[in-house]
Image (cartoon, rainbow, N blue to C red; front, top):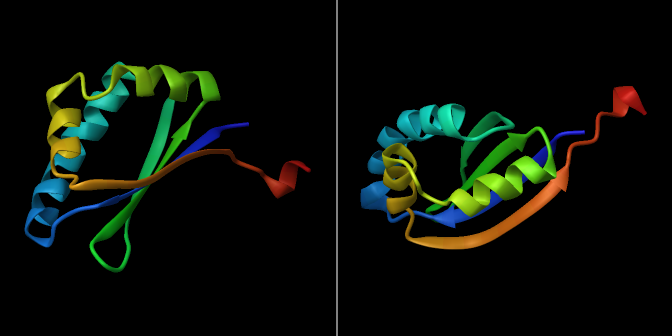
Length: 99
């Protein structure tokens, strides 16, 4: 079953457009450099917070990605717009149709 990365972070209001502008390059870098990257969804929450839901093929793929950090320009630009990490969790996607 896929692994889900849930990262909640805060972005200063005047940098939200910078975050959104950096997103396409960040996703392109993930596709090019991160084995097991499947999909990502960026969700705007109240109070200048955002939730990034990233889908990985496995927990091992997520761990390998995490160890690389902001190793490419698109990833670094996206991470650079983040003011504060609120939380980061890992979970397993459960497909009720397969149960």
